[in-house]
Image (cartoon, rainbow, N blue to C red; front, side, top):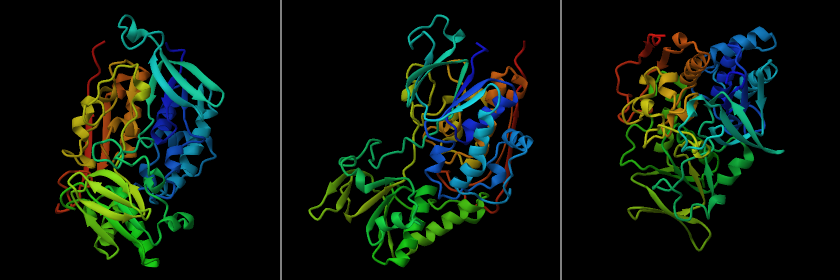
Length: 439
């Protein structure tokens, strides 16, 4: 099997880090990216500032490869880039470097539509673990079937946003009024985008960092156009810890966002409605919309809706491989209890690597945001360590693969109870060493 490449799905930060580790170890690889360039999903939120500084956004091995090439200028480690800057100053240069290396290729416009064992469907047991993978890909030139020795799925979750509907499916009428609904954080600093919402009644659904960013942007828009008003829809019974860790958040920019969102929510342009679980989107006679909750609550006279209710993994192209996933999160089962937002904060996730991320199909790994399933607040540092361990295991270096360490910022942002009442911030250093198996 070793003469076939490792197939990496996704040319985002974690997929490219996996390819960098493969290149560093002399493993052949191919990166399959559905978009037209590296970091295509990141580019869709190019205007959004990251919570992590540059020092936490560049994989160590990728940095070494870029610096050795002599053409890359490292950003200021203490600066906080936007998504667009992350793409332009790191992801695309890294992809270009990897594509030029012997045994490596980064392909764009290559959408993975299926992963299976070569010559065996899901039912066949005999010889399964010894076979290569067949990766089915759609390109502008048609369908292809690639053979790979291993598959590292770093496709993320960006293309699968959660719907407005409370049942996990689109609300009644949600699809019919899709032209009035935006999923994600719009760039309200862009005049043409701002014009869509200025002077309008906007319903905003979601409580996480992206929703808070939209809330702050809409509140600022209301300062320049007083006709703008916002109804913030929360499924929870109280606002509670929605604003996160504040001054105690070691991701400083995330703490600042929470404080800005709190101020926005307290302003006159924002009305907060709790216990709102959307059942239907109903048109009014005047062309505006009414949103109805499952308990009968209504929000009327809505012009635009912004939905920022999280994401979920797309598992459709993995239907012919054997998976062991948590039934609630859709994350690898061994990892799920460590990352569930009801039990853990972002900063106390235990170190994990190839053993936790492996699936029943030997050689198949879910990494990056996809490894978290529906759990929020994945950190790039976690993904870099994931793929370091996974690629070491694929190279047969189990001693390195089993030595997994993480240093993460402690924060209450994604914890059910919150941590903004903690007396002082702390940095949690997590480490684990497993002995290599005998033989």
